[in-house]
Image (tube, rainbow, N blue to C red; front, side):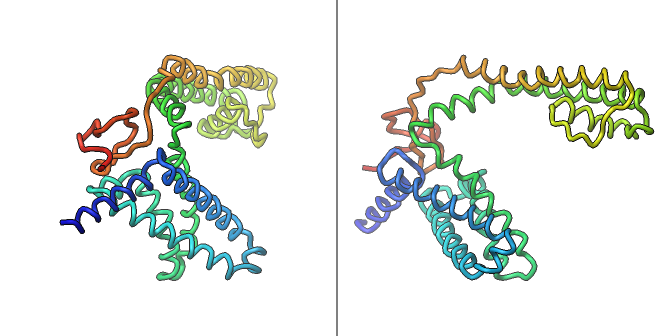
Length: 276
């Protein structure tokens, strides 16, 4: 019975370090993990440089194996420290962790899978989970809630933009025609999107005076359209409560986080958050 309690306490402590950032150990774990992720991304970029890879291939390969093994250990630790491993394995970050770790093993077992190493760049997405540090948690939750609350407005706005690009593409197709590069409506819509977003590749441009007049209007309209989604989200953010008293406590039973400060039990499943 004593051994079982020791194992339970050990898993609880490890869970607190890996999944939370409120403790000193948890913060150090996240900092080390961030540095490891950044180093791994740097290795991926350097490996894509042929001259550098040819000169330091062995060093890059060994370094990547070391990092892959470390991430594998962390992946296994995340699984064994929660009571329902499937909650983590099939979660968004669980899938990201798996996809970012497995390519190196596949390249070792199967020939021709070297291209899968690009998936290692997915490790950078893990930074968003790690940055649940207390000082950033309130701001990130405020932003996420604002995006969620404004999703319908943004959808309506994007739908309106799509309708506008169809209309503009059709008009420019009729005005310019195939002789000026506007060979069809979809191609003209491409021009409308590029112009409306003020990207301006220049690979397709109107030649007629009326077409250039329409293009000028679209360019000016583009500046206003870019500001709309920013205003929508900003408006929602001002409505949010900025005093969010939450922390990074994560339930070892259901993996839910964002509990209020001093909470003793998980608000979703009711399990005690910290085993004394």
